[in-house]
Length: 326
Image (cartoon, rainbow, N blue to C red; front, side):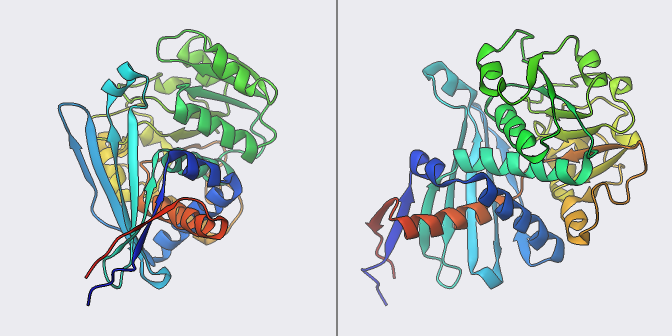
């Protein structure tokens, strides 16, 4: 039977960004990990394909008991930078699982940025040493900035931040953004910067190893963001073998994350650690190097998107358009 009164809610990039709240994003991402851990949330097989212009991917999944079903079509188009536009593009669609009717279409760029940073913060809370005071970040782009923002929120004890840009130059804008929250300055050599840090965040385009394995001190925690496609890499050979490694999804990490370079590594899924509900670094040997290999899962996008949909309806944000279906 035709339904000519059906509506589709549209949220553009500015509306979506205005509705995002760090605490709510953090809670949504945590829920995504837990749903994945207990098998209530499903991540469907990943699509990630190289194009002449860049990379295109689809992450999709659902949670039956929440009547949640959706996908994110996203990728990276480096040529956009010539026009002053973001190379990362993403669009999220939520569907009614009972009928397949689209319910909500959301620009996913801000969602991707925030949910990835929130996942990083959860990784720090669970795996970094509670007394961590020094952090270094490789990459000062959108994701590098978001990761640092959430890290400083999660661990107020962080005092010293050193960074390294892709060309090794100073990033005055990046420094100014965080100058009131920490002692921030460019790092020296990559190895020296890592050796002086309790926490290492890698948020680059993944063109190759960023430092040598011997630079990583015992007890260091690493959040690795940049390896999200076949052939991308940020960590040096040999480091995974001597670390305790967590991933958001093991199958996906083996396909496109750092684990693609060392598939024999016994990685563990981060949601299982959260579900155990124990203290920070539970089951981690004293002085162990810990790594969180983050490739991003569909459930993170969908839980945040559902939160945005609900907030949009409650606040009258967005545009509803007629979307007849039968």
